[in-house]
Image 1 (cartoon, rainbow, N blue to C red):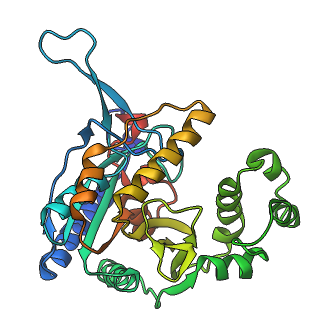
Image 2: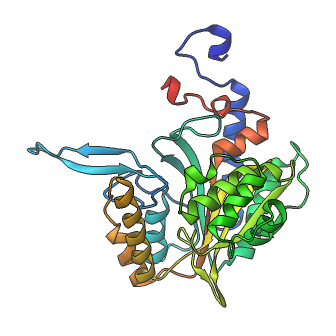
Length: 333
């Protein structure tokens, strides 16, 4: 029973069919990784540090210990990545986790501020092996439900040239503005200004994603070095980083990297993020010193990816709104 049928606000937002689909997906994922010898782990959702990415806004809370009046700030994690990398550096071997993650200011057809992530890391894998394993997981999850043809693997630059008609690595901001004008994005210049990263994100989401072939998964790899996230630079071509994003039916499902293991470079990226945050008047979360210490100790060569399971369930069940696969979205919790 759902609230749409009963009119009772306490009822779940989705029907039992969606709840059963979620339970089946979680069981299949666990079987998939057991066969491959990947260990399931748990890490804290509430931590003393958070990611510095200017595009992510963590929830904060105050921890009041006995006798304290002010308390200390704790962060609900936007991803379990930092803690999982500490496990990897400690010698855990390949690991995965299914957990809740939290991002403030995200709510809409494809977003809920609390969502379910599948995140995993494979020791010794490069981006190609990671894409192979993601595609194998998709095949297992969609088996008997929907025919997925082989995924298309295409570089960010090639896809940009084909579908937007401009070179994301070499085009000037003026050329980006002309591209936006050709595609009738009248407010693009006002939104993006002189920020190259914002231009790339806007053009990709408004021009490229809507043109991706329906019914086929896409792996878009080799992102511009100005959009590094936590990926390492590509050996022999430092204009790009070894990052891959997964799309299906034009919807972004996952983000993966050949993981950056250089503590100095990681701290430089944290500092660059904090500079952007400072200029934008955003909160300045502390850098995760424990992650930096773990990288300095030695992160094994590995690749990892995070996939949004709520969005995946939307596509598996033919839903057009994330609330249709959540028992209690933010509007009903």
